Image 1 (spheres, rainbow, N blue to C red):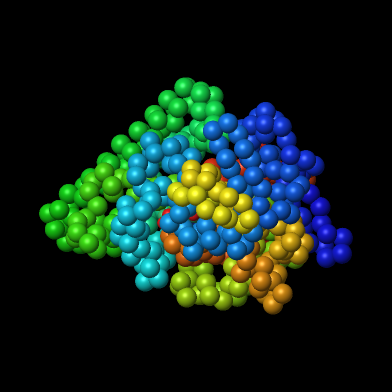
Image 2 (cartoon, helix red, strand yellow):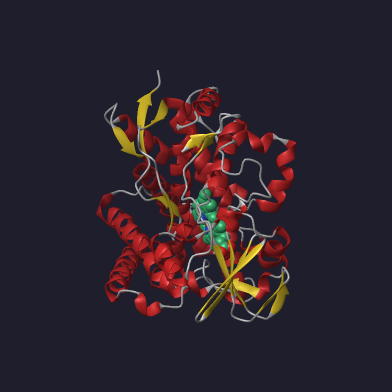
Length: 465
Ligand code: HEM
């Protein structure tokens, strides 16, 4: 961990890339722990790389024009890879995150209304309630003691998505069981995914598969318990139902057939939203805390920006517009630590791409982690510099090489939701607290379901006067 001597910008630690490509065996064993460990120096400079393993031909694409082809122009030829889907199916069923073709199109059209701008306004007071609860929890923590920010960031983002889906706080035994079972499921997912990626599925421990299925079954049963009464009320045309995400899903109709989501589909989509809606935001917010704790000047400016808003209890969604620095800090975190570090696709047809011939079934990886730290597209790529977003010189980098939410038709459905909740959480946090590093503690990024720290992000929180 170091600062740039000329600019004073903080450079967070990340696993130093290998000098040269690893052997197959090395690659597998290092990637099993974290796929970031399998990267080598050229990965951050190349336009396209390839790995050929028994049963797997994989292309890593950094070239902006080729990325656009995969994600936008010819997205129909590059489908969601089954790698992720296979590991997540016991929990998410056939949810929007993993489906393709007409099935995906139907789901996306039916789910879009829940995330329109008007709905974000409705969600704002609900997010405020969850953030108020976070501030109460933080106020009860003893001062001068280190805290793992990952714990609170995971809890508050889970609480926000829970409240926006169900119009109730994540309290009580069942809600807590959902939260803990999700944590178990997430921890196991990479162990099931990586052997598939390397074509050695037989290396998956049956014990891991069993534990993952058990967690998935528990979560789905608990979610069914929550969804059932609302489903029944909707069938009986009960009035006075809350205007939350679940209600929007109940009202959604297939444009062609006029049919609604059936009960099973509802459970799939709600489970997926709970996972996609908090795991990613929690990862990004935790890294933001790490970065600003090491950049006192930036944190003080964020504090001034948040304090200028006045009484936090009466904040409105429109107030967030003035928080430009806080937004840029979050955007810069998403550049350095994109929660979805790699996006996998499978070619449904043979075609030329970036000068190579791709065959049907080949795996294509677009890695925001690499593209957003790419030596050719970014200046000082490893340094934390939120003001870069204000400099005209960054426009090209942004246009070509910034995709924390993906791009094209499958761009993140919850991007506006994530930006709104993150800005609110950060504004409230830096307004009342100063975050400082714990001497000697260096968080180690690991690439799993999202990019998390192997040893937590421990910080000291001091209440500002
Ligand atoms: C900082 C937070 C977040 C990041 C970085 C993020 C990132 C992404 C990315 C990269 C994708 C595209 C994956 C691909 O193309 O294969 C995606 C898809 C998706 N995200 Fe997010 N996400 C975030 C938060 C959220 C939230 C809060 C929600 C919901 C409330 C959400 C819901 C979804 C859904 C439903 C999809 C699937 C869209 C589709 O396939 O049509 N995400 N997200």
